[in-house]
Length: 242
Image 1 (cartoon, rainbow, N blue to C red):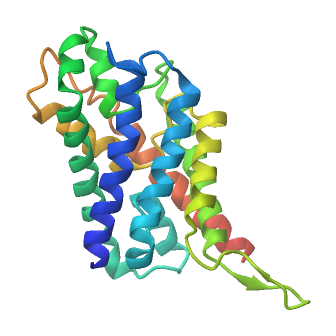
Image 2 (image 1 turned 90 degrees about the vertical axis):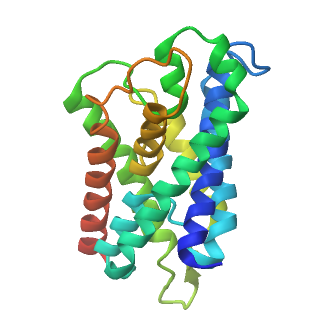
């Protein structure tokens, strides 16, 4: 298992479970249809946990270009590894999206609403206001990356008591993502991860989904640029404080 493969597999698991819960909740005639936001946010947190558990021993389990860039900007990750990590994350996200489509194909066919079908793959704003939507994604990702930077920074107090986790712990990151979804996710669907949104959106455009409609490319830049900016701001503040 190389870091590149670990990021592919970890991100694929993340997306299979994350997009999978969205499919289960919003597509017609599933057992979980209509079960709501709490189910979606909780399963996304569990999805992060599982993805991190798988990939962490081999790659550190970034699973997110905003995390990779934030760690590199903060000086805790090598810049020369950034391109391969991001490529792996996009590959994994696309694989996960395809798995979800194959598994739920009958339910895609049973669902008439085109926006609902797209919602399985990618995020969309509750109220379309690009500056506000961009800020929402920035803040959500800032919380994620800023938290991760402190998870990865074990340090000693004056009493020699070790604080921090010293590594990208699975459970703490899952709880952070869960909290972001519950508290901050209602405005845009909290992509907080460029690969999570753009990778599956590309697959939505490519897959032969029945009556799928457009992929909403006019919005697609928001869940890419917003998380990148959020990660940069988090890294900048971390450097100022550290």
